[in-house]
Image (cartoon, rainbow, N blue to C red; front, side):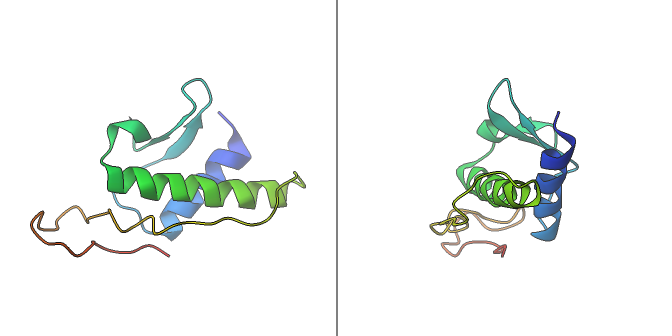
Length: 100
């Protein structure tokens, strides 16, 4: 477990107010994010998208804070369009809460 990088990911998820994520870490053996004791791959596509966006954003912050090379640009293509809040109506076409 990486202390700097997992903490940055957790902070990003908390800042975005992502629900039901008690902790977050990058599992280097499975090469996936584990959030709330579940792998990203075991979540729905909306939550997977939000977690991937949080990971990408956290990676930029980590690289900058630790003088690691990074181009400094991240493009997120509407990651929350497929996300629905935990209590949203599945028949509703509008996305749930958005995280910025």
